[in-house]
Length: 368
Image: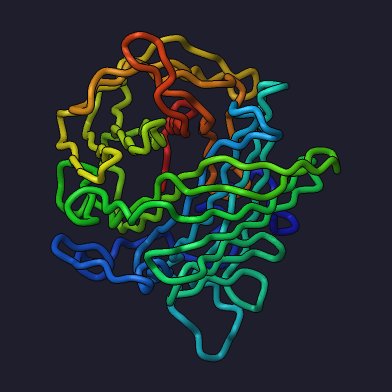
């Protein structure tokens, strides 16, 4: 976290650097239908896009028992500030980098988290355009190896929150291109879209540390990489999203953009079965029905921590494995949101998958 930044939303952070508010670039500059994604180039950054993120979530187990003991997430955001490069100054803040990280301990049923923010450059925060290679001081996320055998590594340490992890993610399946070959609509207008791909079923090994006590862990993870000029329609206050690694080897994604009255503005997702057959979901094919609510004692926001979900892949229940997984990111993105380890249950109540549920816009309208 930058010294002196305290509860400062993203726009205020930009103004502190002398930036103007974001001005969306024309569709086609960074995001366009029909654009063919090419790798490893598109594993890297797209600085012409207004906002971009690399997002890894998963479950971990310590010891031999096949049951999750922890959940984790690490996200690196990159944002274009709108400031024109100044050849006379190497300190021009044309790009910002702000990672988030969290660790959920199922023995305490709560998450701890931390965040950082800095301008890109000067060897403090770096984002590669040629491949996934991200860092902010000692936090990092990198990709290595051939495209079809990708291996990712991350390292995060937070003295303030009392946790750290060093994890390795090995690909077991091909890339999953979301939407139309990686072009994912997020609203009723064509410009409300992103380029979006996922890597489900990553095999995880590594160590986690809580209060300076290290543990060897293994588990399963999910990676998303997404970039956009405009995601949120003016009617949208936030979204609900899941990325679930299924027990049979498949992968389920579902999301909806949500109006202030709780109705869906736009939805989508995908299901890839264990054999590799992919079905992308159209708007109107995904229905989130909220169930039990949990109220945050910090923000007072009420989050549905249980859901009924209907998709072309069937009817399921989503249930958080811990209620207290709200993340306060006002020091970087300016928002408070809920993001946590959850299970997917079939109609009979059996667990058929584990992954992450993300809910934004419940503690106030999300602004990107």
